[in-house]
Image (cartoon, helix red, strand yellow):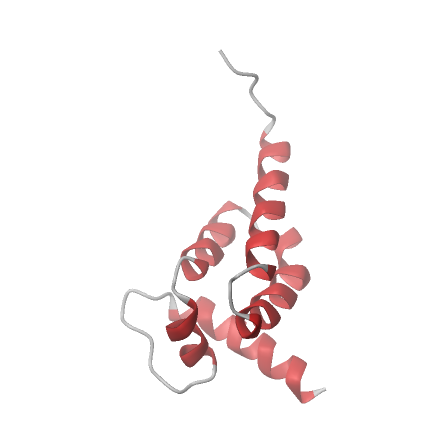
Length: 96
């Protein structure tokens, strides 16, 4: 029987794992979009918001980049409201 972690430790580990994934996507463009987004938001996210981030990060980089750059509309299964948060964050960073 394994040692069970407290809920706070579990979510802390999940945040670290998702932050790492955000910065190590496979394409530099998505690293530079999702990495800063995760850094700015992930500590405040609860389990439901982490689920939304993880679902978005499960998408492949090429279409995800096209959605963020507004070159293509995302398919209906994509959480558009959460994607819009990522897009707004990215646009605010490039506007500086």
